[in-house]
Amino acid sequence: MIDAMPRGSYLRGMSDWIGIIEDKNGVRGWGFRGDTVVSEATGLTADAILADLGEADVIAVAPSRQVASVPAKLAPAGAFVDLQDGTSRLPAPQRLQLLGFQTDHADWDGVALILTGSHSYWCLLSARELVGFQTFLTPRLIHALACPDGASPGALAETLSRPERLAAHLAASEADPAAQTGHLIGAEMGAARAWWLGQQVAILSDTPLSQSYAEGLRAQGVPVTLHDDPSPRGLIALRTA
Image (cartoon, rainbow, N blue to C red; front, side):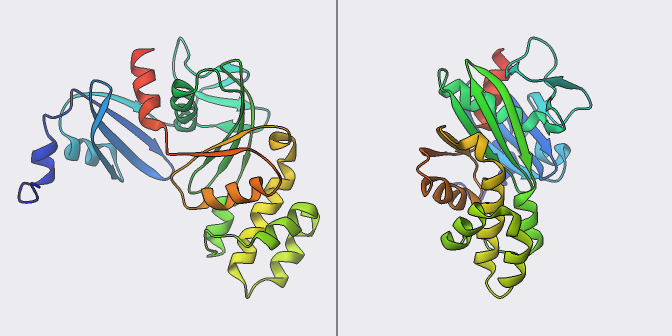
């Protein structure tokens, strides 16, 4: 243990490159030695991350003004930009998560469900391409209503079967926040049925909500696997692309 040494002093110089991701949920950074993560930090600005991680070559990924349409390869030959499918937009940081997942699961076909603090993204992967995706605001709604991450299975199943009753179900369950979480996730799953029906689903998330989504999908007989945030693997793949 080296608790007596200031964290910034300890980390400085350990990394030969740094990866930074900026999005609506803040800024995250990792220090790498080759392909190995040796340090990480979170903060409000990229400057704060760099002050914590030290000086090294930097790769930064953030939502872009430019977009490319799907289907698309996850590792482009040119700029790493947002992707668009109709009215839905997949920001570059979430594209990076898919790239990281694909790095470790090269021949995997199915749906990757990305959960952030505000959005969920149902992404169809096939033949090493992102074929299409759909975005929802369910995590933001859950937090706006001050609901817990754990969902009532019964409430989830009820609104999954009758998503048009969502508003009525929310009104009837005001005294049961876990039921409200279940109703919101159930409504999303009902709207996203075409994305998960007959598919295998990989949930890419470090958020507590991932367990509630996984339980809801498994109750419908969907094969589900849970994965830690693959962003560091995406940064490594982007650096070597």
